[in-house]
Image (cartoon, rainbow, N blue to C red; front, top):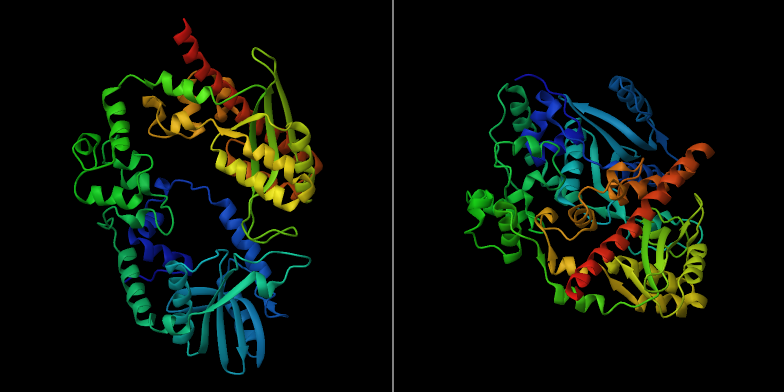
Length: 496
């Protein structure tokens, strides 16, 4: 068997799917980029902070020459008591760097840090792989633990690392998996030594615990219209149907699936005429009144709370766009807010919002639960603004409703009621409404990541990002205005 260098990330990929690992080595050109920058950045940030849990420590700096890291680790392990971070080890060409290693005399404790708020099976596999290597090297591992984020921690004042992080002792569970690790390593290396692509079929492992970058490659032989294109259907149901040999749209017509899935299939197979239930649309529009406001927030979330009163991964608003029309046939106006970088601007945003939206006016949002949650959190935070903020909250209507209920539905919506699908379906040739034509910021994830990184940029770069953040958020509410007007047009056809 050829030697294959295995790291803990490769081992975890192999646990998920050995074919994914094989493709990564032999057909890397088929790999699709998956946008997980924010996940990676969060992991880096949390990992660096967690290194301080046990006080003074020595960090083994990363080096492409792994032998340098191994020699550095070996040198420091000669000390009787020490805390090492990124300590590196190799056994039989299986390599790992341990996030935190605590040595007390001849006893060692392993700590793997994750930016998650819960324990996942793949984390246990990761920790077991490291424990296996160190035990094979005859180190006395007395504890194997995961360090995760405490989702209930609320920051007030300085960060309290011992409250922010939770240490889960998994020693017994890990020790019971060590024989399994040895078997897994053998299977992975056998797979990686063959020249032929492994015959591993599609399954839930394609999407969990992580989205596979080779999914498009592995589904290339399926019909273009297949079960994996059905919006809203659970992954478990999709793979269950696939295993039964039911995956083309034609197959799915006779399958026992929800009517809304069949509706998507029928529209795309038979190019059916749009559903436009004018009576239902009129009922919805009759709930609206002037002056009419269109609101959209942008938020960011981070595992390490930046401000007082914030939990890990709490949605922090940093921007809003607001289009409004005072009266029927009135002029479309626009207001906006964008926080400065690296400061807590929630108070300024809340004050700006109550200044920009009067009491008792009708405010539209798209998928209003998000906007209402943001406003409710602000109201809780600032009691002096609570009455006005909750008045805005209580007068929000959801522009998504006609599309969510499929009272307005077209083939081009592909089973979705997301504004990113509804908008191009209603305005297919309008470049002004095409998010792809924007510079730098094209979706909410990009907006969140751009703002979170704003404080690390030069003044010139900040201005450029801010300009594009404003354009992106403005398009969100302008799109809502256009969708509302499209609904209004349907009422005009009734009158005429």
